[in-house]
Length: 188
Image 1 (cartoon, rainbow, N blue to C red):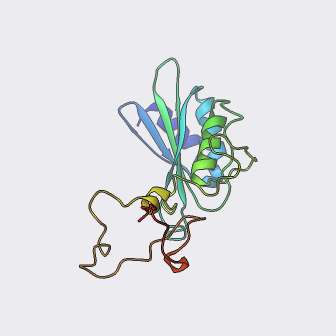
Image 2 (image 1 turned 30 degrees about the horizontal axis):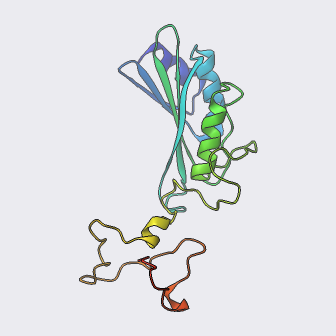
């Protein structure tokens, strides 16, 4: 265990820390996220590297909706601290007050994954009229409705096995019960 890992573990008793290859990783409960980020900054990790989110899968499967990761560096030693937390529907405290560069990353995660933050954020990449969060696993891809997938079909889609779940259409795409498509409309 490195000195930074031991010090972080002492400052945040709820964190599970480990060190490997000069990198300290701390798994932190969401309620201690801001305290852990503050402790990392106070330990000398003043250089913000990145903040990212990943979709944990189906909502409600385990109560976890997203995993959020924050990577910061100590400028003198170039050793980093990676903080990780798991978030359900509760808002994540913002770390933009500690590292101004985190604001852009938090806005992107809120917009693309639907991550709830304690502070309101305005749109960054998508138009205001856009509905949904395109990087979530439950987001319906319009391209699969407009044009047939050129690759291999999913199990159940080729008719040779058990039927698959109902194909969902994105908002605004009429279902087949509306009648035949106009001539020249090649949507699958």
